[in-house]
Amino acid sequence: MTQYADDTTGLPAEAAAPRLPAGDPESGLRDDPPAEQLPLDRNQAILEAAKRTGALLKQTGYPFALAGSVAVYAHGGAQNLQHDVDFCIRPEDAEAVAEALRDAGLAVHCPPEDWLLKATCLGQQVDLIFELAHQPVTKELLGRAEELSVDSVHMPVLSPTDLMSSLMAAFSEHHCDFGAVLPIARALREKIDWDEVRGTCVGAAMPEAFLYFLERLDVIRPPEEQR
Image 1 (tube, rainbow, N blue to C red):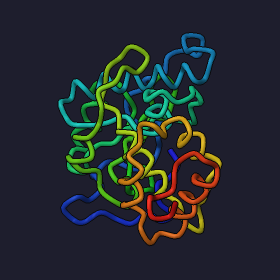
Image 2 (tube, rainbow, N blue to C red; image 1 turned 135 degrees about the vertical axis):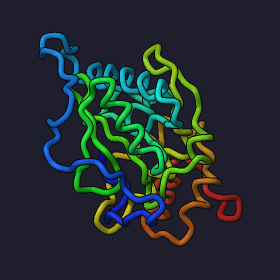
Image 3 (cartoon, one colour; image 1 turned 180 degrees about the vertical axis):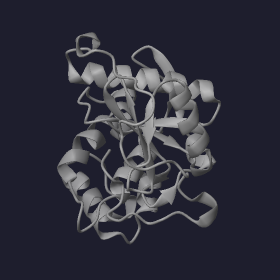
């Protein structure tokens, strides 16, 4: 998962990172089947890991939502999945979720970054994110998720507006890849509340530049007062 911020701002004490052992990502129970059992296509391998992890997360009873490139695919974007599977969970649930996934056979570890946990499912990396775009994942964010079918498995998926807002909030002097986000904006533009997105990036130079870029490419219309 690409970091949604150019730094790793810590969480408040009451929402601190879960106290899990750091170090070897191979520690704990393994969930790596023999290579010949995995789908040959990488996109399908990532989808299978998303489905398996999503089903396990539903069993925990804790709120969560699918994020990242698999969420874009679930909303109708291209099946151009990236390097891993991303899920959002609340900071206060992270330790319990990690324990539940370990009990289910997944290897879970705490990386140096203090805004997520990492797991391994069916040979694929799964990021469990509890800080998105500098902000802790909240009940309200997860409450706006949409229940969608992800390759026939239903699970909550971040709304298109929240997906786009989080991607644009990541833009900074150190991370400003408009080319990676442009196809997502094109694919989901009819499903995104662009007024809401504009409201989340007022005064932020890079996100505002990206909005202007989208306007010039006729992906979105400029605000009424600028027409």
